[in-house]
Image (cartoon, rainbow, N blue to C red; front, side):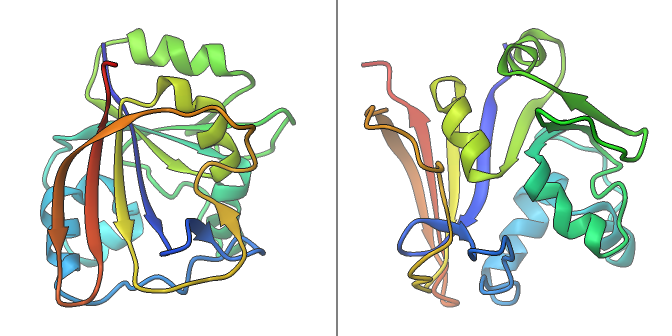
Length: 189
């Protein structure tokens, strides 16, 4: 079965975006970016891959899942298909008028069916509310912890009820930029 991997930038206080959904407070320069471009290049938006002349085939992810609010900043910037190199899915309870290369899913069971299908891992890129709904099915967390406290914003797992989920720390990478990559795998206990 494919792994569902929540790979996301997060503040020291657990937010993945500002209250209005922006993520410009996170560092996009520094020594950690070499790892992003080397190990996680599948998660780089297609238009940046073109600018950087990245032509390598996907090796980690071939599918991306996001909530509508995560897609919205790209749409606002005129980018109708941000991850054209991946199979793109948006989970929404609403009907959306979006690029035909993006499939709209209306419930979590459809995400579970994707996990059962053939392919590389599935990247959950946000948002927090969707991640909270999918938490029981997330196999791995890869957090790019940024050295910033936002104070408020969109929480890593939305506003979910108390229900502990245990993960085991697999790896930590510390960069001089202040960013720390933390990789966790769902605990078997």
